[in-house]
Length: 377
Image 1 (cartoon, rainbow, N blue to C red):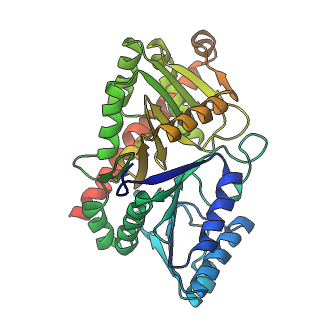
Image 2: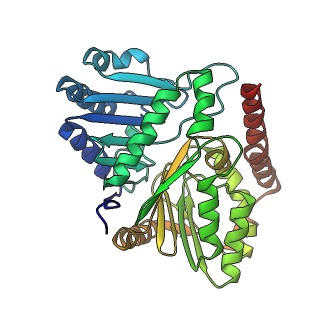
Image 3: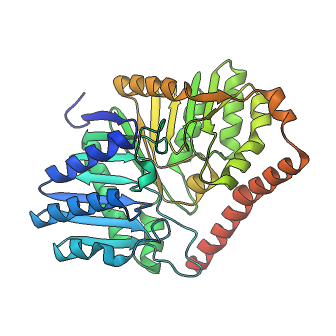
């Protein structure tokens, strides 16, 4: 691997693995710390992160914190007073206001000294603490070192500079919402609202178009018609397609919408499994010899509305370890069988699933487009 593209990867299989590694990286930082989160929930875990950020600022590091105003709405701005006093900076992404609540920053990024970074699905909240089997939600992330960490730092800086305020947020949509950078073993895919080429969706669809093996772990599953079509085409080519979805979910509406898709997908030969021990919040997409990891789910909000990121990795060792992780998660899943599944769906249940699907696949994106058009006006 060339020096220009060199990046090292380390999988973090749970909150118990991720949070200590993230805190160690903050404590080791000497120049800068950038933290971008959707949910930052006041708790002993959050306090450990805040205190580590304060210590970093006190020793002279440039500390920047960006939180989504909706995802972290229960957190008071005063929570960050000690960081501000130490010289750090804090900003809300898209402060709450009527008519401006639909577009959210769902990205999760920590970058220290521009050299080590963490991405994945983990928010800073107590429910993510644990191994995902005996306690805590099942989630995962990855630690990267090298050039990719620097690219993630640049992505953060663009969001931090432009995210605060109505006009700035519109500029963010135009300037940085949908971009991609790549090197030998990775591709960084950033997405957001608006029209134009969506690198994240298109890259996923292109990989699926020729896939021979598809293994997906996804917390909220409501993909576009094109992605569903490619999953069906893959099985017709003889590919094995396995979906590991949430048996327990924190968003019941999303789960009902996903359930509406089970029967047509299983008719096409897609295998569907549901994770049993805990709430599933992970996002991991294995397509042949590449793996995607980041904040994006395969649902309408992630693919069309929110600000998201995925990293597409082709490093053989990282992909191999991801496959092993998939097998471990699968061992805690129950397979959904077509016959029993159809018999278990009452008319009322099917109506609820139809309504949930219509709202999340049609109404929510429509309202988001209306909201965006008002910004343009």
